[in-house]
Every structure is written in C-alpha cells, then in structure tokens.
Length: 184
View 1 (tube, rainbow, N blue to C red):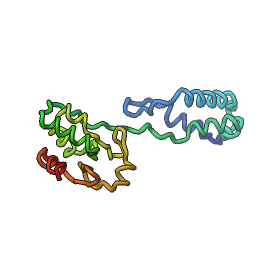
View 2 (view 1 turned 90 degrees about the vertical axis):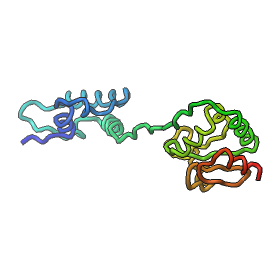
View 3 (view 1 turned 60 degrees about the horizontal axis):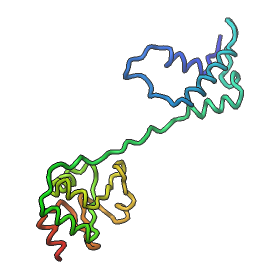
View 4 (view 1 turned 180 degrees about the vertical axis):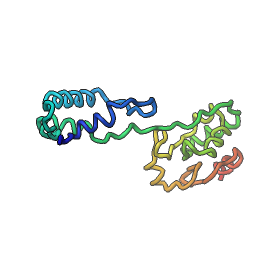
C-alpha cells in the first residue's frame, strides 16, 4: 500500500478541487509562491513510478528546500486593519474657532476613539475648521496614529476625556462647559 506524503495530501485536499470565490485562500506573496513552486517542482520530479510507495516529503526535498518550504508555509499574520475616525463636516462658528484657539494655547488634548459616537459628536460641535486646531489623541489600539500607550499611562478610562491645564474632564462637553473650565 502506498503511503501518501503531506505534499500530496495538501494538493489533493485543496489545490486540485474547484473552489468558489469565497473559498479561495488569501493572496500569497511572490516570494512564498516561488518557494512553494520550487518545492512542488522538486517533489514532483522525485515522485516514484506506478506501483512504488510514495516516500514522505522529507525524503523528497533536500533539507534547505524543506526548511524554506516549511518557513514559507508558516502561519503569516494578516496586515493589521487601521481605522480612521469619521470625517467632521460642517462649518465652525466664530465662537467654536475662538474656543479651539484658546484650548490649543492652553495645550489642551481631547482623548478619544474612532468608534466613539460621543467623541464624534464633540468634534461635530466644533465643526471642521475648529476641529483641526484641537489636539486629538487616538486611544483605540486599531485607530489611525494610535497613542494607546499614552492613554494607558494617563489612565484614560472613558471617551471623550479632555486634559486641560493638567486636569482631566470626562465626557462630552458643551462649548459653555469648556469655556468655564478654561476660565477656572
């Protein structure tokens, strides 16, 4: 009885059967495809004739090709997905612009997360132009330009959190509340 090698099991179970679009494996890098093609070519060239037993893949490949094929087949981590906060639209009022300039002058920071609806509402309150003046710190690990370490060091527990003058203020604030904080 012939013993099936891992390579043939792999080929018979995946590559040779028809697949639907949703079943197709993710695209492989050119280097990985090249290593696998070399390994496959070397293995096919050494396949026994009809009636002979099929040796294990280790016997078919030289050690350096086997190591290259095994390392290429190792589990690859998919690229991380990074999320951007929603775009703030709408005009800024003169009051919001003036307040954003005051907050910037004080070195105020707004800590938030791309998925936080209250953070988005807070940004919308300022409008697009004023929002660009505010120092926003992304705390979500998967957020664009994430500063998760800073948020953890500052012990930010909820979003949005304002840091103004070395003090922390949790929650969404109105323009009046932010003006009072600046005055106090």
